[in-house]
Each structure stands twice: as structure tokens, then as C-alpha cells.
Length: 135
Image (tube, rainbow, N blue to C red; front, side, top):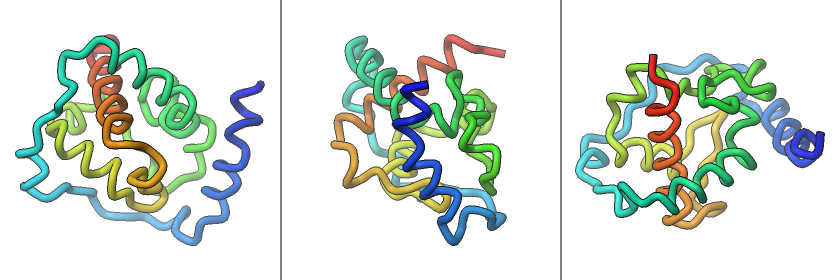
């Protein structure tokens, strides 16, 4: 209940964002993003920190397991990414980092909201979700 109350302002912003209900084409990071190396790869503490960030900031749209089925994501178009999908699993850490940094409506840019380290921690946790919930 507390999480829902804390996420209410985000849900309101998303619902009233002018691009929330627009359908968009595929979101592809530039090829240069694939060359960016995850500086926290294999760091267990980064996964722990990433889980906390994910729970507080991402699960409301992406769902607790990262399937893109969070409560606030139901009305969004395009739908939140399913981090367990083959498409996302194939993307490089650098591409995911680029997307998290840049944002694309209805997902906000997290460049100002999260430090570089926090964004990498989220990437590490997303990869952990992929391992944990393999098909």
C-alpha cells in the first residue's frame, strides 16, 4: 500500500503525459551503445542496490518480475518493456543503459534522476531478473 501511495505522483504524470497513449515504433539504441562496457558487471552489491531501485522506481510499470505488467503500465502505449523477452535479453548492457539514460515517452529519461552508478545497478538487476526467471 505504501509503495502505491509513493508511486501515485508518477502514475498521474504518466497518465497525463501527452505521449502516453501514442503507439510508437521499435526503440533501438545506436550501435555505439553496444560498445559501452558495464563497469559493475558481476558486482553482487550492485545487484542488491539495483533491486532496491527497481522496486521503488520501475516495478510500478515493469512489474515485480520485469515482465512489463506493472499496475501503472496497463494504460501505457507502448507497453513497458518485458525484460524477460528474448529481444531485451539480446540487447547489450550498453544499449539498455543508453535507453535508461535517454528515455522515450512514455518512459522518462533517468539521466538527471539517477547517477551513472545507479543506472548500471539497475541494468545489473534487470540481468539478474533474466537469470532468475528464465523461460
